[in-house]
Length: 269
Figure 1 (cartoon, helix red, strand yellow):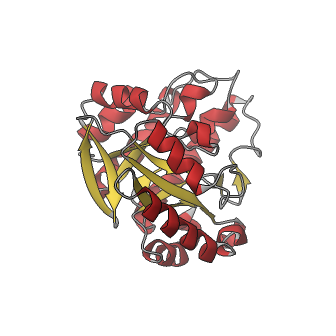
Figure 2 (cartoon, helix red, strand yellow):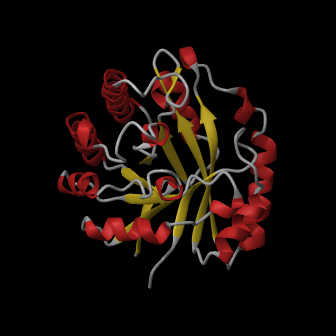
């Protein structure tokens, strides 16, 4: 039996999303998913200060999630998650956040790099030297995250390529020397690597699960791979999960991972 899962979705409790939890769950159910995780953003900004958007809505978010979990019980497994951006910028606080709230899973992501530069807006990717320096720092900070932060899966390792259209091919191969030490440390830590499907619906034309990346992660001892759409609209929930599974199988994985109460659970693909 194939278990279709999406463990990276956002609702209006993230400041850049455009759907509610009920809409996410309905889209997941209509798409044939067996499990969906709602993982709204918790971001650390410059100097390690947490963004107030998430904190101001914790009570409402918790209550709404309880309602949709009860409403969909028996039809769809709804997992409580969070995506923590730059957790290493305030390691003690982010560990406390990850340990609070009875989360099923925690995604660790990099959206910004020190000293607080947005990967999306603050780099001139037309310059090869800028791309190279950005990815060198990206994977250095990713390794620091592995060492000091508490998270279950590393989100969208190919995130910067989203903004490089016209300048590069949709591959991390030019930065392989930076990526491999990170993949090794992530695998040895026992955490998961996320295959993100955003690339399939954007200019890259493929899911973020390059075969050499997944093969290296597996060869280093990595056991767990999660799949997420990074949906910010309900219509993107569960989209291209099958393509992600194809990439995983090609690299030697036959299970997808979800998390229940921060424990990995492997399901057949």
